Image (cartoon, rainbow, N blue to C red; front, side):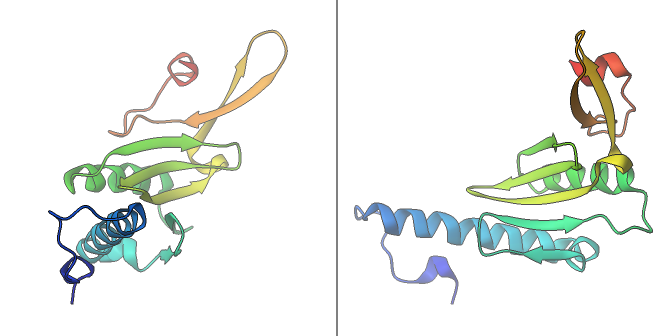
Length: 142
């Protein structure tokens, strides 16, 4: 039985906790459908019963191509996709309601270092657009 087939009537006002639980159930069903439709991503996935599912790019794969492909697949699945980088890692977050699938690799594999201003303020950004187009340093810092 699906989490959505539990007898909860959508027309009846529900407590916030029920509404939130149903939102998570829908999101997890979307994550499961996305992973089932993409078994090559699923075999590298580690689902956390938190707010995220991690997909680390295998070391034997082209990290940029893997991330760009995952972003494309997420958009095709109807999910909002955002890029992210934090200095140690970079990749994309594929959103499913309050949950997301984080496809990532080490920053050294997918990011460019950007120096901003007179004092070195190190920031990281993906070295490519989500369509796979390489970025110039000026585009990365924008």
